[in-house]
Length: 234
Image: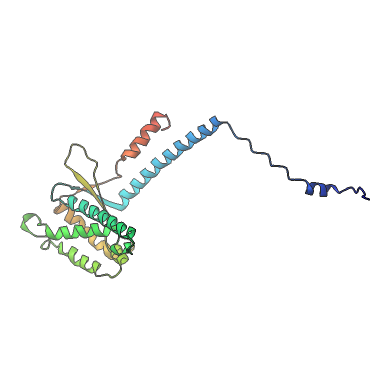
């Protein structure tokens, strides 16, 4: 014999399967596309602003010079330094793919090789007037580089080298030129002793031309700006 016993309401609710939560209403597809377009415009404007700020900061921190890329010039030496570094990177990656153990840090960052190439070049070229770089005091470069490379750790060599970078200049209808930039080292003040020597060498021997102010807008900046103008968003 069974008896009907009324269950408390809270037990009834606990025994019942939970009701599915209502799905949030989705906006119209047109609204999503409009917001996405607005977001893309904001990102493009932000990228252009950031690029300009970086160019202005670099113009303050770096000393930048135009140098010739003619045959046998310093520009050719700087470019070859980058090509050789990239080639060595490829060879090391191939060794890793072949199962060999490779210490990538042992060769140091690219600017060490570029700075070393500039120093080697300064010791090989003959200065105007028949004097050699050594007679003009550029042998200090070599003495300093010997001290730097005597360091045992790659990180020490990197810190004691002037941070240099090089790229091909965007010039049309003119002699091929490159852009060499270098910055003072705030962490290792002794490295800065080479700064005035490097500037003097570049101007007097390599006939470098100092560049002032932020770099002009690059191709991507110009293209993005043109698209924003076409959309009446800039």
